[in-house]
Image 1 (cartoon, one colour):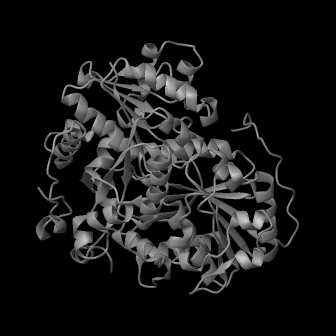
Image 2 (tube, rainbow over the protein chains, first blue to last red):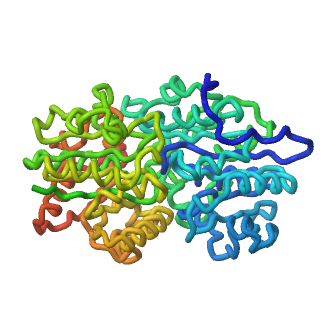
Image 3 (cartoon, rainbow over the protein chains, first blue to last red):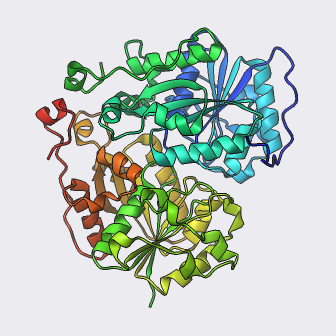
Amino acid sequence: MHELREDPLPAAPPPPQPRGRAIVVTSGKGGVGKTTTTANVGIALAATGARVVLVDADVGLRNLDIVLGLEARVRHHVLDVLEGNADLDDALVSDKRVPTLKLLAASQTREKDDVDTAAFRGLIERLRERCDYVLIDCPAGIEKGFQNAIVGADEAIVVCTPEVSAVRDADRVVGLLGDRLSIRLIVNRLRPALVRRGKMLSVEDVNAILRLPLLGIIADEPGVIVSTNKGEPISLDAGSQTGEAYRKIARRITGSDTSVPEAPREASFFDKLFGGQR
Amino acid sequence: MSARRIVVTSGKGGVGKTTTTANLGAALALRGKRVVLVDADIGLRNLDLVLGLEKRIVFDLVEVVEGRCQLRQALIKDKRFGEMLAILPAAQTRDKTSVTENQFAKVIDELAEICDYAIIDCPAGIEHGFRNAVAGAREAIVVTTPEVSAIRDADRVIGKLNERGLPMRLVINRIRPDMVRAGDMLSVDDVCEVLSAELLGIVPDDEDVIDTTNRGEPIVLRPESRLAAIYDKIARRLEGEIVPFTTLSAPNFLSRLLGRKAG
């Protein structure tokens, strides 16, 4: 479908075994939940015992450290490693809660143009040699930061909200990803009540355009904003339905869950009464 | 004559730049100002969708820059606003490096001769697209939401605007008063303090925005919407009027129970 695409960089070398999987989380449009998805899926994957490294590719506008609540522990960042000013092991920040999870933070005071795309691919390769999953949190847009983020990955998770603008941007990104990466879709921030009233696109509406294998559906709920602001990803909350939706996504990635993603349950009377955070 | 040249930016994506650009532009047009909205998000344009003008695009910004058409030919008038509102669409199949900062600024200069407000919808991020969008502007509106990550990105962008000497004011978008009261969301005062920025507007989270955006109908065209009045106030503040800020009340118990917004 996308065979006319010009690939500015050579494809990644064929995968020798065993090597971790490198998955880029991308969207085109900003603010649809890439970082939240990366953090929650990463934590849920690590909670299964897998060794996971999360890489923030948003040089200059990093946020993954905040969402994970690790901002105070970041000492070195991607560019320190790429420029030889820090050891890769020293730059990896271990998560406080799930020890098999590590973060490689982006540089906040530098620019995406400072990152050499080929060197970034080499970095992802080195990470794949020492862990089971490398999740790369892609910046918004389709500029240099996007090119850097996708170069080392051979799988992609496209995050899309049920909005026409997000769908259009996601469709553009799918075209740019081309056939080299295997792509799956997460529909984020669905409000089933609005869909029922015809005021929001349904998952089917979204995927009628994107036509991607569905990896998961996440509801819009205030609990996600709260957990993000607090640096405590909701997938750590054993009682949260949204947390469970992220854990399911992690199991679909590992292959231990082959169920078809379902739209979130309607909020009940009591959910509404208590703000949907039960 | 020379128009006001305002860039709407944020750093973080998805906080409401395009929605703010469309509604603020529409509110100014309804007040009798001649407004041109410029989509600087080359490759990922959306302003045309939000205004429902996507089917009428013939030429785009890149074609203007490359001299393939006249500026006026590329402008799409929004007929709902008479002669007052037009957009200059971005190219969808090109990338942001196909236009330089100087070329972008030149287009805005030319636009400034034919309107009262040129409002530039900046792409997310702080890469080439951001630099282009800012190059043509004389003032900035920074849009943020009350979330730690959005505020951190806004702070970085404000630093970049200061370096260029661009005056800026803040629009805080998608406030949920009930969450602020429950201590689950940062308040307007918190945000203004962190960013030490002057406030231009406060816009509550309203589910009607999703629907109107999907339909390509700016919410200011629905006079019954509380957001129409709020965007009109922001327009008046831009015009120099001193307009008090609305106190946002949380949806009451009953409307929350029924899943509707308060009246």
